[in-house]
Amino acid sequence: MTQAEILAALETSRAAPLAAIEGLSPEQLLAPKTIGEWSVRDVLQHLSLWEAELVRMFVALEKGRRPTGEGFVAHPDYDAINARWHAATKDRPLDRVLDDWHAVRRQVLRWVQGFSDDDLSRPRTEAWMRGRPLWRWIAGYTFRHEQEHTEPIRAWRRGLER
Image (cartoon, rainbow, N blue to C red; front, side, top):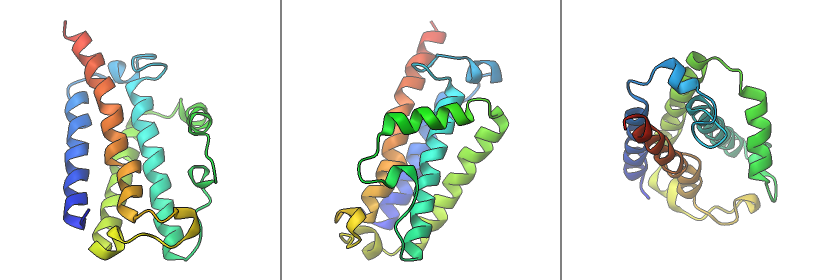
């Protein structure tokens, strides 16, 4: 993917959950077990935390280091990571979660704007990146991840409107 394609995907993917939560009250965003075991707020926090991992990866790459975040161990247990992160952030105020969700996306956009098409598309030589190009990491931690979690929010919302 080119830089322009990634930036467009980031914009499109963010528009979908924004539309899905538009007009919901704070009480609705905080209602427990609306999206599986999580609230909508929990889902947004989850997305923010994984995008923050991506930003940490960018910083590590810039310094020529391997990222130290939980998502970058040899065989991450994503369910366990998500459970730990949820337990640590479940009481975070809604306004802070929303601010973080927007702020981390702005950081990702700034980083992506700084990468060339070659930076984004060439297979990476860092052993921990397993030859994957940077755009695949970006996609997995941002727009593909956001798409995965937006449909359950839409489905829950459709149930409210019946």
